[in-house]
Image (cartoon, rainbow, N blue to C red; front, side, top):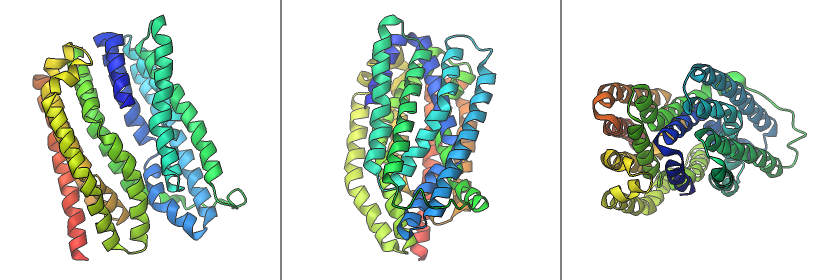
Length: 396
């Protein structure tokens, strides 16, 4: 909710062009931060709990080093590439994207750290640092700098400082959460095995990031007006309000699922899924009701220019968001079961479908076309993964 409120504040403070630059830079940051760990952050939820329970501290410590190293290397490469591409762009886009590049290493490590801390048995602390501390720092800095002429680059930089502080806090929390004998354990690495094991997690993570951010980037690249880009970003942020709760709880469910599958308790996995749906279905129904009933009111909070262009995209995105929320654990289960080929086919098909639809629809339909592409690809991808996960359960 705090992130959404910040977006409303920035849309009003930065104007259409400034908010467009902020939205594009933010989408690019999320995409690069999702790529940087190369799947090692999500695989940590599958691997580390079991290693820690069995007392295999050397392997656990080796994996943490493996994840940090590959995250930093990839983050620097992504930042350099994005900075080179945007160097000739006009302001305010250039300044906002360059600030995103500077913020990326700390942000990518924080994305890794939240999963490591969750895997270490501290999900509440991980959630607090990732979902609350970072936006609080960003909000404080944005409010402090607003009287001095807030720019898109300054807004992005405020987030960058938030990621830096969160990264340091996560490192400190991980050190405190480490079991006795952690520092004395000799790191053991299975680099080849870990690279292979993290690949499905990377493919899924990249596909999810593209699914969420490709609309904003496609609108910008295909020459849509700033109001269309801003309206889509506002609609995406509003539709994503409910996702925070699901993604946060899914970290807990993901850790629990990993332990249950490792123990061979498939009945326990099924019961966990049913208990999740008991509270999630009413929440999703309420979410859709609020979005459809008050679409114009939600968007008018950002800017009047976003209202007409954003109503239909907001409703389409809320449907795709609700569907993804309900079936969010399906890809996690496929990854844990080693069904990499099924996962690859689903996410590759979804990404390809979205790309084709964006190219076909955005030039003529703008933000509505981008939202329609998101909806169709989400239904196809999550539907295929949920069907595959259900078939696996029925075959047991």
